[in-house]
Length: 423
Image (cartoon, rainbow, N blue to C red; front, side, top):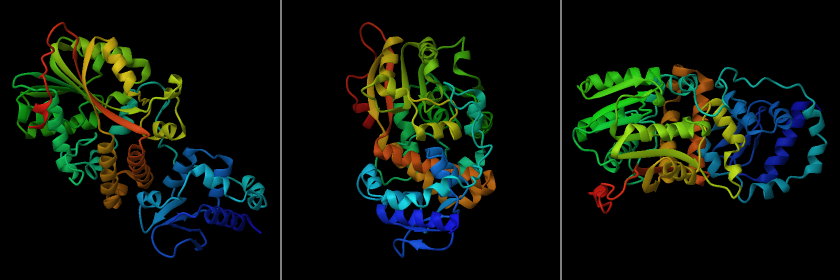
């Protein structure tokens, strides 16, 4: 018996024990499981040996990106929804290990294959905080690529759904205005947006709330397009963007400051610099809005900073240098650096929905994505967006908007209730 036959026997044994509600189709055309519906394709008999030799999450990422595994008649979401019922550890214990032992030794010792995704990882991905090179790795892929799945304004952060049936264009428009309302923007005020992306918030705030906006970004490609959009709106005298890091800002203070989805790139090692800079730049009585992904807090405070396998894969391939805190640490940092926290809003379900819509939109235009960035990177991003949606849906990742002001004696300047946010 050759190794391909051994691998087929191992896969069959595992699938029959786990009993997922989807089929598995092997490299030889054999189909295991339901006759119809979505199927997991295993296109290479060598993947069993690869998993046995290196049973880590990154191996599965590599298998997906290289098309050693794929999905037929459905999506990754479909496979997840039809996964084996019950606890994973319990199901794994049901696999007849003795039956597998006859084949595993030969597969473990079989010749391995390369990952097939060389060049997709970021440089120095596990440092604390994202460098300009790391930002370029993520955001300067191609403006055309991002256009395929983002909304018409190209907002690449969690949307805000007043109704979960709303489309992404409406939800992102509502998010921009929700932020502006939380900041209580007034005509003539100076707004700083840190990590301003393609400029959607600055443009919206200038057009609809009359502010003078300034943004900073480390992404050359995003800034180029953002400036084009500002010119197209006739807002060059009211909205400006610089390519620089937030600590380099000096000589100007701001009435309001927003940080929407960039704090994840700061890194634990740079928290003091970050919050001290925000305080320095914010005028007395000013409002700061902090919008960031977080992790769940653990009983062991040190555990929250440990990176699991999925986290390491995300940092390696998607967000080099990225680190996320927990909401308690966010609040600790704000208070320790001279802020008073007023409001904290959990948007976890909103981000689960946002990422699902992004993934579905990317899949619908997948041929265009391949033409824009190549098949390996397109597949990596489809996996990333799908995984993010499922992670937020399951509650393993969270996201909060936190409103804070510079600490002061007496009145903070905020309204006595939050009724103004929902008029």
